[in-house]
Image 1 (spheres, rainbow, N blue to C red):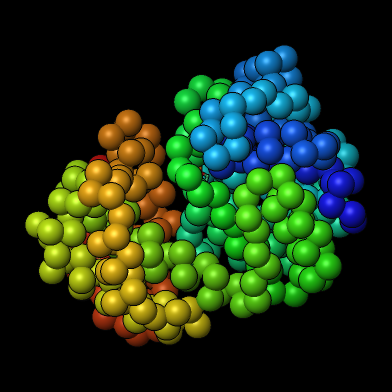
Image 2 (cartoon, rainbow, N blue to C red; image 1 turned 90 degrees about the horizontal axis):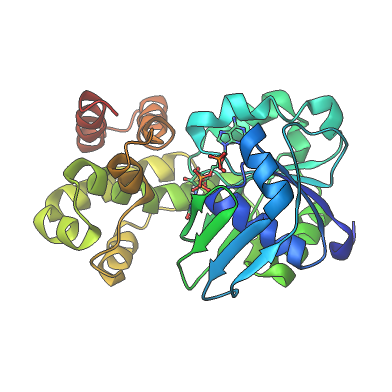
Length: 300
Ligand SMILES: NC(=O)c1ccc[n+]([C@@H]2O[C@H](COP(=O)([O-])OP(=O)(O)OC[C@H]3O[C@@H](n4cnc5c(N)ncnc54)[C@H](OP(=O)(O)O)[C@@H]3O)[C@@H](O)[C@H]2O)c1
């Protein structure tokens, strides 16, 4: 699988998926976006328009369909957790065959779900650091000056991961291959969960949360670090707090933006998964449990 010869399906060509689809297509790969009828029609006729300070403004042609009809080298899964089950019906395991399944979703539980459907040794989870928004079908605003991917996958042949990482890096987002899937997923979770839960619960940007709700933030960071450590992930609460302190005060989490827009939240995939892992390992997480309960009580 040479990096200039990939056929890549992208399930859910939104903020993250649409950006990667467009970048890979621009770099010369064959890209097939899998989406609902209307989005697929739009993409087939108009391509994907990207606005990005980092990668430029450009339009990329892509193929688009409502279901996968032939094997591909890689299927990037870039839907939100809330639509994962329905979306996966578009990727029949028998059609995908030997292709890698590369989920970009935040959270820690989806790789196991994917491994019940697809070859376990072809599921290669990735963590993406980016801020990218689907402002309309096929129109992507990449707002962050960064776009980085950590690719992992216990049991996945290393050369398959390396080939994809090479292709992604050449196309735009700097991509590393890292061992230890649990550590990679929990590193992202440890940073994301406190930030997402608190900004959404209080409806305030990070700058206000880290000053007005410092105690809650510190408790959440410590609880999450303990759960992460119990799950084989990193535990660096001081480092997480220092990172929050270094971000612009106006920064919002994507969960908070979803709440503001009235969209379903990835609350179960982040807060729910954290509570389930804590329970499994006997870690007390009273502040996390209260915040998740309050968010659920608020109808999320
Ligand atoms: N956006 C970011 O900056 C960012 C950064 C890091 C991590 N993440 C994570 O990445 C994951 C994806 O987030 P996102 O922001 O890229 O989501 P998004 O912008 O909402 O895009 C999701 C895409 O999935 C499509 N979709 C929904 N249901 C579908 C179905 N049944 N079949 C096929 N396609 C379907 C939507 O189609 P339509 O276009 O037709 O609505 C949309 O294009 C999440 O877990 C998120 O937490 C996102």
